[in-house]
Image (cartoon, rainbow, N blue to C red; front, side, top):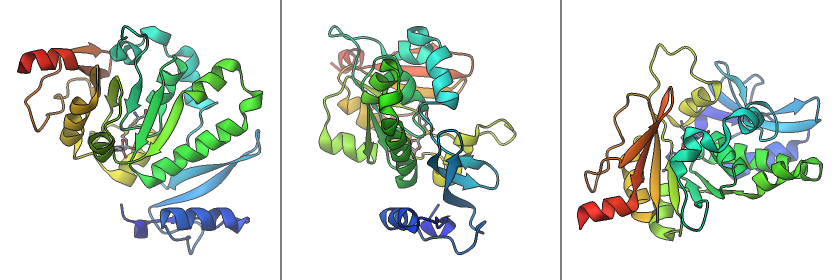
Length: 271
Ligand SMILES: C[S@@+](CC[C@H](N)C(=O)[O-])C[C@H]1O[C@@H](n2cnc3c(N)ncnc32)[C@H](O)[C@@H]1O
């Protein structure tokens, strides 16, 4: 989606909308409601009196990120703890929990669960708009910090947002990291009515990720310990470009498969 198909609703306090418009190089909307397919607006949360930046479209309504309430809080409390497939897929290293780069942060659902389980997570996101939503959610959560439980505070402290294309970041910065986690966006099946609102909004913004193979290669060249790729149940593994690598193993849950590429095992295959 290019910037002519998205606009920002001007706020009563216009400095906020002007600032975001400059930062993202996205125009302010001429109409309210706008005639563009997607727009950004701030939604007032009556309970907290916080203004929350949201990505809006007629199909999805406002979609925003909230670390402390709603789905993320529910997943943190009732998601299955350390035994859930996502956490098991990360494994453990002799020095304890591995450090993680989530190279496809999106709405940070997975990053937040991992951080709540004690993992330190660098969240990489290339979409400037999704990064702005993440930044807004992190700022709001940090603002609430004095009122949060110790567990919530520690979870937030483990998250670090980096706005970057992961392929470039991994290859140029060569970060020292144990696990790289990938959850690329795949084309949704047409008849699937229950595609989550968040995923619909991401699809509208960015479309499917067509360079997942390059990203897998960059991740395999960078991670010290393993690369984990989230796939829908029954889907083919992501194909690398450089080498024909197959996942070393996988972990299954009802709708999802985590393909695990163990770096040591891959090196032994090559030598
Ligand atoms: C399916 S979503 C990830 C959802 C995320 N796991 C969650 O729990 O919310 C994929 C996201 O990865 C981002 N992405 C894809 N390729 C990327 C890359 N090379 N660098 C950075 N971000 C990327 C997309 O912009 C999109 O926001």
